[in-house]
View 1 (cartoon, helix red, strand yellow):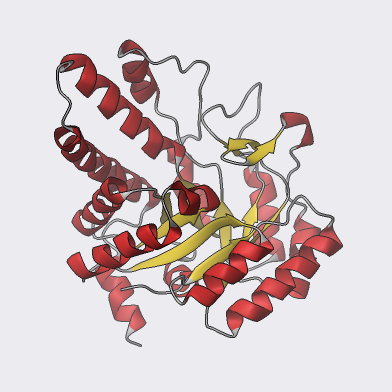
View 2 (spheres, rainbow, N blue to C red; view 1 turned 90 degrees about the horizontal axis):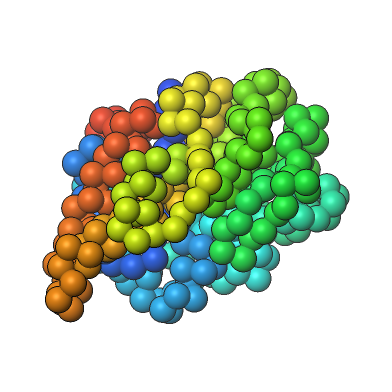
Length: 316
């Protein structure tokens, strides 16, 4: 069942965070659905601009529609991740997405509000939720690149003004996280003091954490032992997910960790079976491993076991 992020956030606020997972292919989609059903968790499928271009946006949409049919008990939102204005309108008009993110955080405050409000006006006419971003996360993710020196934390006072003027339904905040596998250089870490100030300025308003992958050391070590060369990687402490949820974070984006699972599975498989050329056995292994990964993250987010309660809330 595809629902809006607003419906999921209403149930989650102050109790747990909903996992938002980026997918690019059928194997990821199957692992994601299986993991969320087994852990009985609501979830958000995120589609980036890069994923829409990887094969064809219609192919990815068809895979998700098939997942909805195969797993009718699933409750999830379909969300555009880091969209520009043109891509947001395309998703809004597609009749498929239940949520979009407009990322104009690189613009001035007034320009960011202006662009976001246009997207909000178009989306709300069709019952679609809108996420916006204020502040700048460091790091690299697909076509997003912000050098550490240009990363800025979200200003709580500006956050209140931004939401009031733009009408956005949720806000991605810069609180010290960064995109990609190379986070937290130096002393950088999550700024819970800033997050608390934002929550105080926007009580009961859904907040979002981007760049929240944990970049597990054991995954990186196994990748490197199988021929990888990932160095000096670090991520978010998973023990900080629930404390963030208590402060209003209702959506936590996790992408890099899933890529690491894919890389580890494939590197180890072909290292151990160098004569293998059938991609299906390794694909099946990945789906199983990705499902296990999803279960582990839903447990850490507090969303595991919430599915029946979410379904009941949707009937009210």
